[in-house]
Length: 260
Image (cartoon, rainbow, N blue to C red; front, side):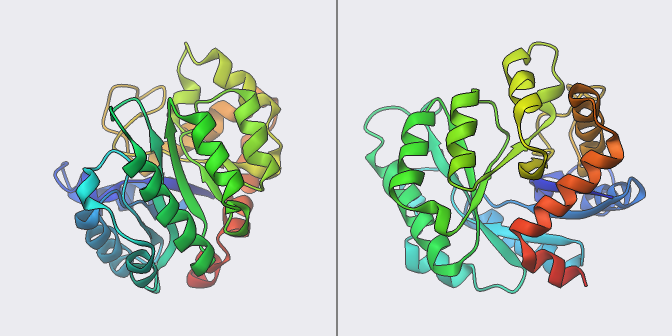
């Protein structure tokens, strides 16, 4: 069995068959759990509704770093939203200096709200970082984010960044990007990661793995990430599936309880 630790299932609503078809396809491909990630206030409502509708889906609450600065939720507001019984994580949050420009103090303040909320709620963080790895890791370290734990999602950074994340107890989630032919540095990082700290994800509907690259991604395709990692690391696919599933439930014990 497999777990898609990060997807935006609500964004598949306009695809043939909609969300129901994607969930059915995931089930047919042994995907036992899907963590559906919010990026703004609208999607918070959507992912929570999906989590209520499907027993194998849980949700996060948060505001993506690239969403307009006026859309920020405070720590207290995030805490209220995180009280939903099927919300198990805070995010997607972090820093992104690729898409946002100028004085990004507001982005760092938004990130701080999320870290504080995660520590208060004892719910792990879902971290997005792009062209901001040093500031992202510095804030996680200085703000004691290890008290909440979390994931560096869709990891594309170097080994030094991975090591800093591991040192504060975070997990590294690998997406379809690791299957791309030009992802040589990431593949070397993937070989070094301890098996008990790896998660797999799709980030659907984005970043479909080989052999579906360029197509609309869906949770069922997380199996291709697992298969590629198994070959890359010289481990069995069954081992990768079992380890990443156990890692997810270790980080999110509430998800295991909800599935029981």
